[in-house]
Length: 309
Image (tube, rainbow, N blue to C red; front, top):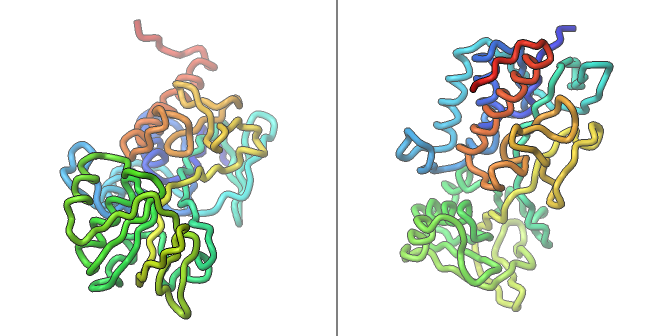
């Protein structure tokens, strides 16, 4: 079995950027990911990535993939079942094979937080959606609700307003949060109504979604419910490796993206890095920093690390 210098677990902005820089540093690397491109590719509009005035998440991640393809970095689109330590190497167990590596870089990102109220699971795919980009098209001329008040919710509401007749934003706080440019677009859009200090307690319907019930007893009639209430870390193999997590479940890293476990690094939205600012730009940056740190550690172990004055 080949022994890679580093196995990058995760194929979003952090993982792909790490793969590109691993190639540039001449490291023998492999990327293992359920889906190359990650959740970033579901963003319908990105306006804050340098070099692109406005681009969809899918288009941007396609550019990432094309850049990665310039290098001979193998990619396995498979699920990681476990990671264990064997002598001086890590063994990554997949469905049909094992991968052996000297270093691990965890870049698994986050997953959508579930609404978790009665009717959420029952009507998933029948009016409840966790992807505005995927499903907005089906609600042309209809009334929909977006649950949440962050950038993702605001952006989703704007996209939906371009197709739906009416859009409610249902948010538990007294004001929206996120980038002011998105908030301004929401509050000036005549199709969008924000219901502040409101919480969904149940999704209603028979065969399909027909409405939502709020904590104060009000029933809002809608044809679709789009959930945008944040994300939770998609940690992989942290328990078996003994990697320390924050109270919220994010991987604790230092300024070099190193975890508390020797030769285990992490990058992107799954970490406590970048002051908790989860952006494609910061995730990509963390992936690069992690690879540079791994390269330095390898060179240091060989006694060949060049120190910049």
